[in-house]
Length: 161
Figure 1 (cartoon, rainbow, N blue to C red):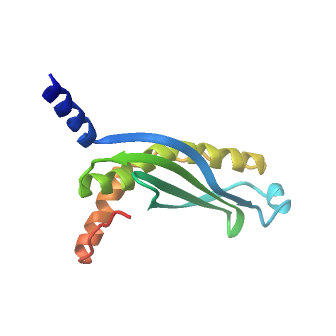
Figure 2 (cartoon, one colour; figure 1 turned 60 degrees about the vertical axis):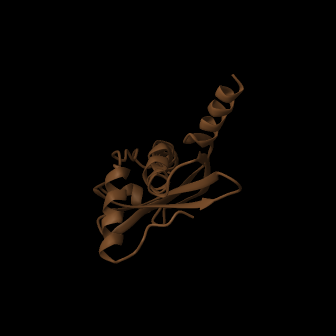
């Protein structure tokens, strides 16, 4: 009986674990450089989106992942607004091999953070008195695969921090 308990406890200690600890806004900015004149023009926006992720190892098995969404909206040639959010999360991740850890931090965690970042960005834009900014979903698995291909072509190795 004791051997069975020890084996079960040992398997539990080595089993992969994932737990979301906290989601928070790390940084937030909004600028409407042509206000109020921009509100008096015909609205024909063009939207530019930059997306970035980074991760940092914290104490023991905790990791911070930061998803940054930067949006620049132009009306014609003039910048209507620039908005940026850094949506972050703290995740407990244990007992994953390097490839699984890299995928989890590079695709799975940003997938969790994106809806929060999208909502925060949309709220920020509407508070600036601009039309709602409904960003389309992002396939972080595809972006992660593209980055791995780019790194392999450049002879780089993905690292987990």
